Amino acid sequence: AKTTDKEAQWILSQIGKIVEAGHKYNDCTILYRAHHVSRSIEEALLKARIPYVIYSGVSFYNRREVKDAICYLRMIIFEDDMSFKRIINVPRRNFGKKRMEFLEKYAEAHGMKLYDALLENLDNPLIASSKAKEFVELIDGYKQSFQVFKLTDLLQGIMNDSGYEAMLRTSGDDSRLENLAELKQAVFNYENDAGEETSLADYLQRISLLTNLDKEEKKDAVKLMTIHTAKGLEFPYVFVCGMNEGIFPSKHVDSEEALEEERRLAYVAYTRAENALFLSDAEGVNLDGSYRYPSRFIFNTDKTYLEYTVELEQKFVESAESFIRKNEEKISGVIPDRFEAGTVVRHNLFGEGMIVEVNESDGYYVVQFEGMRTARNISFKVEMERV
Image 1 (cartoon, helix red, strand yellow):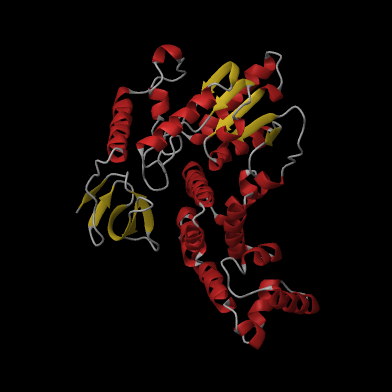
Image 2 (image 1 turned 90 degrees about the vertical axis):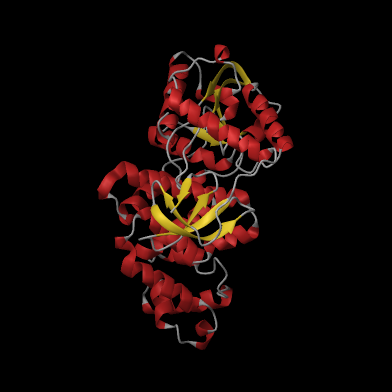
């Protein structure tokens, strides 16, 4: 597909045909390598009001880090108590139960929001000994300036300036970082699809619709789960989505042994299907400016065993094969030259910028681009030229 949203729509169209042929939603199972891949699928299922059940993990917009990030955005416009309670102490700002109880009593007595109560009590000794003032400066700063930012930059900025993303990196929980990255990608896609009419209020309203729809579990429902969860099980119709480089195989693969483990996992996914197997991937550009390529596990399967609904352009295939070849060279120990911190580079999407940090362990540059308030993390795999 051209985008992840169109990939999701294609999967739903195939499920529709299966149901029309007399089968049940319950006969259809959607598998994915990582939890964050379910986001576009869930959105499509919700919009189409097709019942589904997640058998591994929590639905995307109910995941802790996704809800936290959205609450930061909600504070900029709504200052609602629910969002305030959720993020005032995330990351930790020494704002625990005792201080919250004080604010709640004050807000109730004066008929105001918790955030307004905080503003009126910043000099109170109990509050002043916390980092509440830093939180207020963060929120008020974005209240003054959020309208001049693209939504993508707004989310990136507040995640950086709040210390939230740094907190996730320190925790070492890659799955939470991947979910936050997928939320950024979703905002990026929303912005591109909607054009110039996007606003923070519009986006938050859309998210509210996605999270408040009736999601009562029903017996006849499409199953969603990770490939690991599906081990040992079989299903009549299996969809393996997100068959992209960096997702499956995972971008964290750093050895030949790990790559072969990913290949074995692909075999597990393929062999869950009893009647029919559907594989899907989506083109496009990731948030870091890198291109999305089909998984090598698609190319590794002889074309005589696959029925392509869309033939890939030869130029795109060559580009994908070149990327895969370079990746396998890296895994086998052939390391390409790296830019050093301080190097001025040009990115095909973001223009010129300076590399301010090189993160070898996670495989990305931190680049401060001209005209952007916050630096961006750019994967080593993204092509940039020295200026």
